[in-house]
Length: 198
Image (cartoon, rainbow, N blue to C red; front, side, top):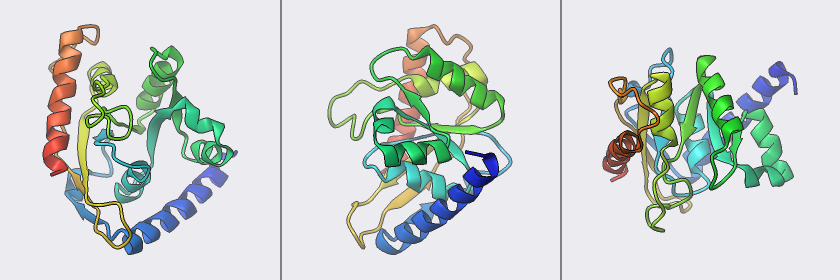
């Protein structure tokens, strides 16, 4: 799909999603001033429902490239959306070298990405281990992490709040192969997200 067509389709879809969420979920946006349009970020949020990625995409008011599990591409409709929004698919439960290289290239091209440290919806509640992808990419690239907290009931006409925190700078860390460092950075990010999601 040509870039111009992608941009047009993306704009139409984002507009429709924003209107839908504004009416049905009464979305409230807090801290958008922490997201300057001219700065690149690694967006990172808690993951509760299927609405989380589109909520971030439409409220951040910029194009963000999400990392998502490869299984989603098996659905033709989701695969089409994935192409339009330039999703990077990741193989679950293994070190996906292709996805890592694609993500690093995306960051090098001055584009913003988004990940969910929980790895799956309600990962913390399910007892899942946090994923260290955000920590890896922020240390490797030097790009700041923008923490996001999403709260509120996902029911029609119940308000959903999305809070954008202040950028987190981890440039003092240099070793992406140190498991302890990756865990430390991951935990720092997740604690900030938890505070924003209260």
